[in-house]
Image (cartoon, rainbow, N blue to C red; front, side, top):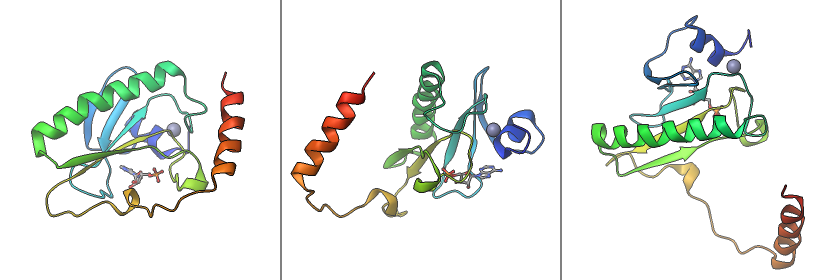
Length: 139
Ligand code: AMP
Ligand code: ZN
């Protein structure tokens, strides 16, 4: 897609700090890192989100995540790595080209605020109804 910043990175029209590349994916450093070693993995085909992705694309991205999480562990030995993927503007997806975040957290960096939420018990009847709708919609 011509005005997509990640497609431009794939085409080499704008630079990136490349971490890994094969025929179907590219991984590169996030230039606004939440922590040291923050990496993005993207499929080379322009798709916006998980709804548009093929199963094969998802498998390829996840296979790359597995490869890189080992490399991150060996290279910077973080205490943990958040694997994060946002679908849609309502959940703060900013770049509308499907991407996977690998966000290591090392000693002294503190917890990731986005991974902490208050546990407030839900309405069990509402949960049951919603689960019923979702399970009925599974294809
Ligand atoms: P989001 O769409 O909210 O999941 O996040 C988009 C991410 O892309 C942000 O963390 C940005 O810092 C990152 N980003 C945007 N432009 C670039 C770029 N040119 N190179 C590397 N990372 C980028
Ligand atoms: Zn794109």
